[in-house]
Image (tube, rainbow, N blue to C red):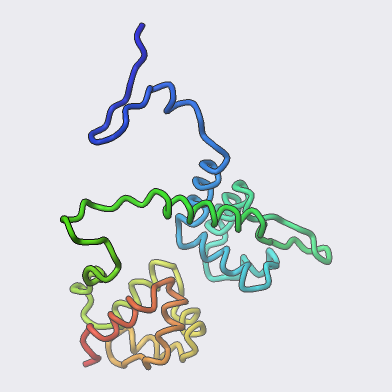
Length: 215
């Protein structure tokens, strides 16, 4: 029987046997890292550990406002990937990040995109640079005001008003009024807000400037 080949438009022809054969250690690490940061809750868990000096007790992790079963599910996934380790510190279970493995995964993940970035064909004489046009901004048309923008992203992370208010250093009652469109958020809080909601500061400032002010 002849050998099967896979042919895609505008690509090299590869034997099917070759595509099945070789997954390098780097391929596996890139896949594992992608799984580790695939969901906001996993990024949240890793950030909690990192921000506490790479040493966070099990009790502290489960003391967050997130559902304990949900946290446990994602911690077990991260442990399975080898990124999170468990140590006994003063007879207490403590989570830490395998820094060497995490750094290696991060570098491989970054290099993958640096080396394999696919760019659309460009007209003759035009180079593909960051200055070639404005960056696409998120659609804000369904938000009646900036408070609604905050609320939607807060609920996506399953954060309570009290938790978010503490993170951005304002009173919970004030945050409630902001989310209802009755009060405006002080612009000085935008960096803290962007960090708490895992949003880029640029997008957060854009939404703050573009959405209607409180009634």
